[in-house]
Image (cartoon, rainbow over all chains, first blue to last red; front, top):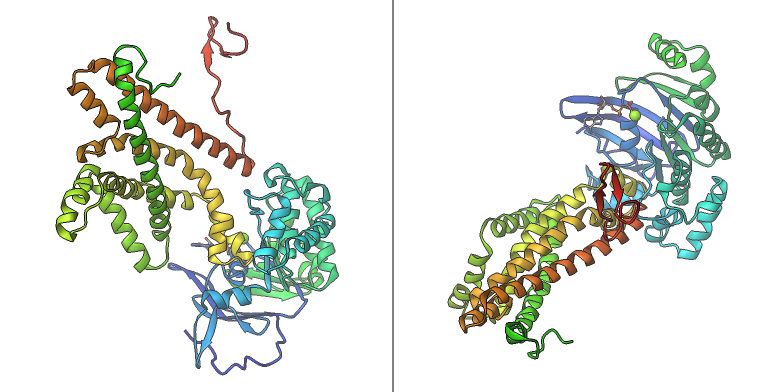
Amino acid sequence: MKADPKADPTAEPQYMIRFDKVGKRYGDHQVLRDLDFTVRPRERCTLIGPSGSGKTTILRLLMTLERVTSGTIEVDGELLSHMRRGDRLVPADEKHLRRVRRKVGMVFQQFNLFPNMNVLRNITEAPVRVLGRSREEAEQRAMELLEMVGLSGKADAHPGRLSGGQQQRVAIARALAMEPEILLLDEVTSALDPELVAGVQSLLRDIASEGNLTILCVTHEMNFARDISDRVLMFDHGQIVEEGPPEKIFSDPVEQRTRDFLQAVLQT
Amino acid sequence: MNPCSSDLPGTVGEAMPFLCDGALVTAQATLGGAALALVLAFAAGLAMLSPRRLVRVPARVYMEFFRGTSVIVQMFWIFFALPVLTGYRLAPLAAGILALGLNLGAYGAEVVRGGVLAVPRAQREAAIALNFSPYQRMRYVIMPQALAAMLPPLNNLLIELLKATSLVSAISVGDLIFESKALINSGSDRAVVMVLVMVIYLLYAGLITAVMRLLERRMARMLGREVRPLWPRRRRRSAGGELTVAAGGAR
Ligand SMILES: Nc1ncnc2c1ncn2[C@@H]1O[C@H](COP(=O)(O)OP(=O)(O)O)[C@@H](O)[C@H]1O
Ligand SMILES: [Mg+2]
């Protein structure tokens, strides 16, 4: 594995996220190859691109659900997948992962709420167990978040009794309760019935417009992408084909592959 | 009326005091075996899921060994051969419980492993995304859901265990079977004794199932699933052929 051992870990991070020659392989299938990209603090980026181009893989790497097969990832100036031992880089151990992971939160396509806990508990369990908050403090914060996502009345409900849109709002509240600096959103409205999409999107618009989070969002909803992002990155075959501000990418893309993709998406 | 009383008429009165003693020993063997089996099942079942070979392999060896040899042979080894090898002799009931626990624990390990694997991978990933430690993921997210999947097969195993306790009579533990043989040998009516023994076993099995059903219902409620009725209503075919609930339309 090639990585730069001279990189100074004490330097002020200019980047919240930094991919450096990242490769990811599943068996023989090279999903990402020498991928370089950076995200500034509080920047909101949207990843677009055809299915199978590696967008989810990028988010899963950042969430430490997968490990890189080559290259390095840094989050807020700290190595994510590796740690330094002497002047060598070795795969990160659990302790290191837990420290860096604290800054990252993720909302999944399928919500993935815990069915063995009610809504309130879904939101408070990690702050209590992981951050060491008191139960009262965590519940107070959870109630504020539930109010924000418009579900104050559902604190005691079982997640299975909620609609998809409501479940996804709870999942958003649950991720925010951990006070992440980076929020990863992986096609968070694709599993929702059409009439529930708008509500979740407008909630996320509000969250994004507060501007204190770094957001990395994968979506096929181009209007939504335009509203919430500072920058759009077009992916194909695990590589960035084109990037730029949403106005530029959506109205005047340079690359043929971007044009083809946008045309295909906008037609449906 | 005390069912263990010798005042009961005929063979029943003659047999019940002895059968009650035996039933108590059978209960002890079942509960003791179950306690040991559960501890071993969780320890070995979780160990088999470990990413470390050094943890996984011994658990696997334990499971394959005790699943692959019969309880009675294990019991004979523990009761007869171990004292010769180690100079330490276990009481017969303790040796029986040890053998039953080791054997059923091996089957239980596979149930525990399967239950954990049955929890969707996405649940584990959501727990990682919230930065739970590996222990916390298991304790607060995976295990509560896995238990729900484990309860029905564990119920079966406990019934198996109940039946297997009859083997302790082979190392002279005075369980139900041991007492019933003694009664028959001393001239009690064989048929009556066997019916009584059967009824006691059935009562025990019913008790185990009832407790497990209650646990299942609690789990189902926790997971927000449809709760099955404790005793499913019998369905009967009415004359017209359509299905009706017994308590409803059909007489
Ligand atoms: N666990 C896995 N094992 C094998 N292949 C995988 C795995 N996860 C993803 N892939 C493959 O990696 C490629 C990129 O997947 P993904 O990142 O999910 O793409 P996208 O989110 O852009 O649709 C796909 O071809 C997919 O089949
Ligand atoms: Mg995807």
